[in-house]
Image 1 (cartoon, chains in turn red, yellow):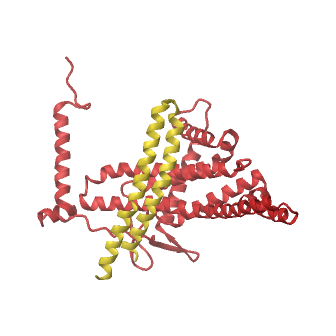
Image 2 (cartoon, chains in turn blue, purple):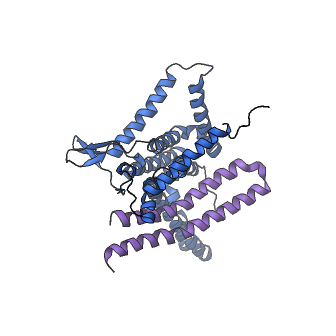
Image 3 (tube, rainbow over the protein chains, first blue to last red):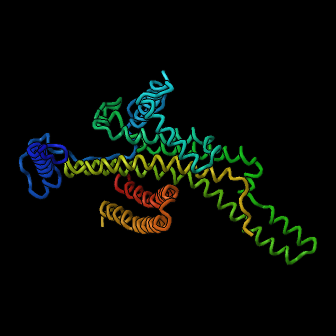
Length: 320
Length: 76
C-alpha cells in the first residue's frame, strides 16, 4: 500500500510545516503592534519589532537632473520600462516558428489581450486600438507588480538634502503617473474619434446647435408650433452636448483617482498590516494586491477601449 | 475639540459613509450578473466582462472617498 500523503507531503513533514507556521504566527502576533498592546512589553529582541510606518503621499526626491527633481517613483517607472523593454527584446531576438516556452507565454498573453480588444471593439477597430491599450495595460501591471517584490521599498538612500529616502516606490502611487496615463488615454480617444468620424461631425456631438437655430428659422418662417417644439428640443440638445463634453473631461480625473487611489490604498494597507502582525497578516493582503494590480490595469486599458469604441461609433441614434 | 481629533474623526466618517453607496451598488451589480448568468449560462464571457467594468466604475466612487480620507490624515 503506498504511503498516505496529505497535501503532497507525508504526515511528519506536514506536522513540521504546521508547527513552523504556528510558531511564526505566535511570534509575529506577540512582536507586532497588536501583541504589544494586548500583552504589554515582553522584551522581545529589537529586530523583531516593526516601527510605526509613516506613509507619505508626495514621493521623496532622490536627486535632481537638469533642474527636474527625480523622485523614487520616477526611478521605479524607469525600472519597469527597463524590465518591459528587456523582456521584449530578449524574446524577439530569435523568433522561431515553433515557439519555445518563454515566447509562447508572451504570445499567449498578447493573444489574450488582442482577443479582449477585438471582443470589445470589433475586428478592425480592435486591431487599431490594440497597441495603446496593451501598452497602458502592461505598463500599469508591471508598475503594480514590481512594487510587490519583497525588498522593493526597503533600499534606502540619502539624497542631497541629507534625508533618508527609499530608492524605489511603486510608480502608480505617485499621482503624476496616473494623471499622465489618463491624459494620454484622453488624447488618443479624441484622436481616434476625430480620425474616424471627421472633425466637424465629432465636434457636433458636443456643440449641437443645429436644431435650436433651425427652430428659430422655423418660427420666423411661420411654423410656430413646430418651431417652439424644435426650440425646446434644441435647448435640450445643447445641454446634453455640454454635459457630454464635461463628462469627457471628468473622465481624466476619474481615471487618475481610480488608479492612484487603488494603488496608494493598497500600499498603505500593506504597511499597516505589516505593522500590526508582522510576518503573517500581510500574506492574504499580498494576494489581494496582486489581484487589484491586475484588475486596475485591465480596467484602465478596458475603459480606454470602451470610450474609444463609443467615440468611433458611426452615428449616434437620434432619440426621436 | 482640537483640530487633530476633528481631522481623524472626519477621515473615519468620510471613508465609512463613502463606502455605503458603492457597497450597495456593487451588490446590485452582482445580483444582476448572477440573474443573467442563471438565465443564460452560455453568455458567461460578455456578462463577466461587463460586470467587472461596471464594478470598476462603482468602486471608483469609494476610492474617491478613500483618497479624501488619506489626504485628511496624512497631508492636512
